[in-house]
Image (cartoon, rainbow, N blue to C red; front, side):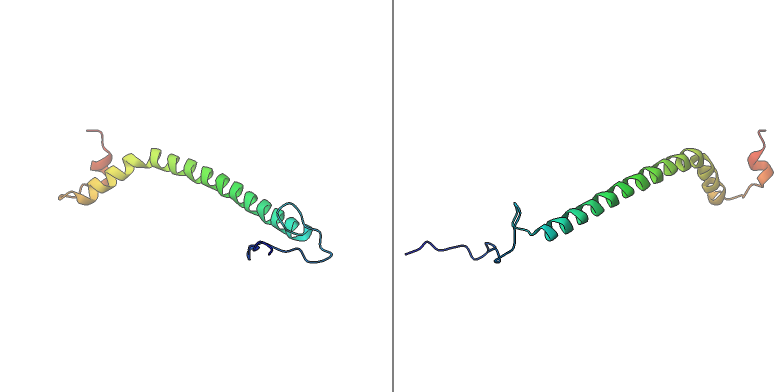
Length: 89
């Protein structure tokens, strides 16, 4: 009696050359092309992410004090004029 075979194992079709992983050359080429596209997309996301973080750093650096002043003016009870707000005395 022959040993049972696994049902999930791929059986090659006659006349079809299979590679290391049981794929035809066309399937392997398509898989490599898809992997290259994913890799390119990941690089593109990384570049845009670095640019966005750099821009956010600049905005946070130069925008923090004006934000605090604006919130202070909005929340204060007697609203100061712009001259009173910016005058050093």
